[in-house]
Structure formats: C-alpha cells, structure tokens
Amino acid sequence: MVDPITIIELGAGTGYVGIALAKRLQSSCTLVLTDLEDVLPLLEKNVRENKLLLKPQDIQDSATFEPASFLTVSSAMEVSHAGAVVKVEPLSWGNSSHAAKFLSQGHVDYVIASDLVYFPELYPSLLQSLQEIADLETCVIFGYKERAAWKEMPFWEQFGRFFKIEVVQIQNKSMQHKDGEEGEEDVSMGIFGSEEGAYVFVAKKRRDEDILSGVDDTLATLIMMQIEC
Image 1 (cartoon, rainbow, N blue to C red):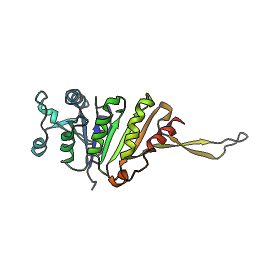
Image 2: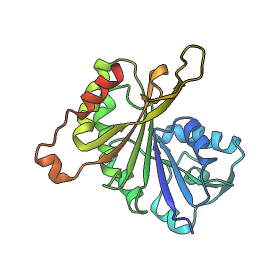
Image 3: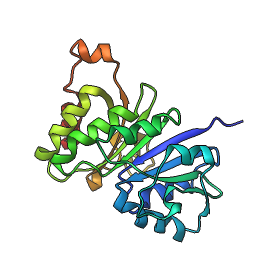
C-alpha cells in the first residue's frame, strides 16, 4: 500500500504547473493549489476545463475551511481524477491563519514554489509562509527563473538562513572520438535548466539550534555564484 502524500503549491496562478503535476501523480496523493482569493475563480475554471471530476469536500474539511462569500461553493472544492486528488484553497503569503488551516490537516510532504521570486516587497511574506508550512521533513521544490540577480539575491540569502538548499543537477553524456574511431563515454554533471536560465532548487528546513548557533548562511550566495559560472 502506497503511503498518502500531501503537496501544496504556493502561488498556483492559472494552475498550469499544478494541473500538469496532478495528472502524473497517483490517487494516494493530495495536491492543494493555492493563491489569493480573487485568483481562485480562474484557477478553479482551469481545473474544470482540464476535465477533472469535481466532488464536494467532505463535512470535516468544509468545517475547517470557509470560502469567501463571493466565491461559489465549489471554490472550497476537491477534485478527483485518475491521478491525484486536487484541492483549490486560498493562501495569502504571510497569513498565519491560512497556514494554520493546512497544518491542522496534517503533515505537508512537499511544497511547490514555481517562479515566485520576482517582487522584493513580497519576499518577507513568502518566506514567512514557507517557514510556517514546512517542517523538518517537508521538501520545498523551487522553480526559479533568473531575471535580476541583484534584486533576487536578498531573498535567497534570507531563505538560506532557514533552509538547506541544493541545486538540481543533470548528468551530461558525450562520446569522445579519436582518429575517427568511437571513444569512451564522457560523463559530466551540469546544472539542470542552466541553458535556459531556469533552475530547480530542493530545500529542507534547518533545525532551530542550527539557526541560533549561527549556521553558515552563505550557501545561497555560493549557489548563485555556481549558477553564474
């Protein structure tokens, strides 16, 4: 029997990433697509148009989630199809009550954060939500498109204080040819997405004692330097 997995996507927007992911997951997975309340109708519409089977949330869930009055009842919806179970719910970055509702429903295994680092004024609230939702076992997967490194670096420096970060790498293979003959296979490691300037980071929360003891917080800077190389 496969253990259930809970995944939350922050700033899901149109739902493009989440919907594509949901179709590739098993039915034991629950994927929660989140965004601001006024974005939910569009997100919900796109979920419907992808021919996902809608069903009302159960009584227990509806008791812990109250949709905004201007949204339809289905905005507190749960979606079921051949892949994951999908929920559409509001989560405003920096809103501790929103984060608490998710935590009351159990452990979050993965947090998806795709292309969220672009407005400096949102960095503190984004970091707050990540800290509140994730525990030591939660894996945060960041999709990052570099636009203006000097504006984005402050977020990664602060994020690196509270989370251990790794850059996703890919194995590159090529054949070394010598004098027209087939040679040995040359294997090297590269950064996934570097050719397009888009990267994937995997992060886990640091322990409080590590943060308080002055753990090295330059990791994010070193990672960004590696990307630039």
